[in-house]
Image (cartoon, rainbow, N blue to C red; front, side, top):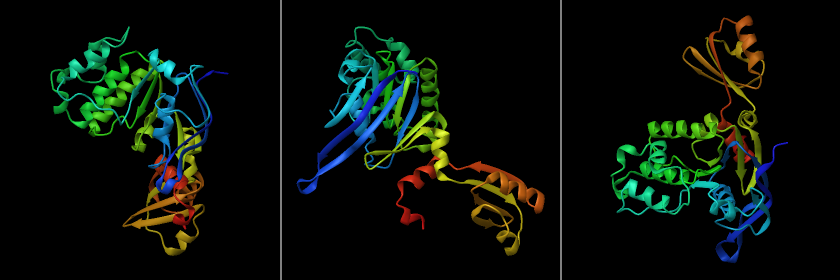
Length: 302
């Protein structure tokens, strides 16, 4: 069995709320992450994602429970350069250039990956002389990414890493993250871009109300949506539609019919053998659908 490098057991973290109440941001979370994992932590606003990552980084302490990173306190792993982080919070000095920023932070490390190397990895070489204050939000995120890579960390913690990046920049960012993963780095990230988790994460942890409500391989979590989609070219009668097996709902758009089904194989077989439907396409449920299914009150689905 592979040893966990991040181990959380029954973590609880509360913050003051309105009227003297306490808000429980993380409520009894137990999770282990192994070396080389690529895991997404998802959930709606207020789910506890950022608070959990802050505890892993030693930025805040749990009120209850046990948390170890590489067998010790999170702060010790950060001081040793074993963890790098790209966070939503934390500013950069606007009057420094991109390269000066990387140089100054590099000077704080006894050993580092090399200024030119991390700037190239973060796609910053062409804007090295630009003042940070003149950089876009996405470019500043890439500067933070370069800083996170400097200590050559074994674990990367990323909180909304591509916020402010345009689609092309996000694509390049994840290409570079894939290279980091191939080199053996453990990557733990929170994102609102569910397609990023679907495409990149091998494991997905879904949080809601401070608790873990789903955890497993991303494909398995996606299956919580409980349905797939089939599109066919067909002009059915009302009677034909009523006879279809395993259909949860359907939508007719001209000659195209879209089905939501609990058994895509059985429905496709019926359409191809018992009707004149053709040009079928089958799509599994998306991670976004699973996300909505698991985090939306059941009354909203009725």
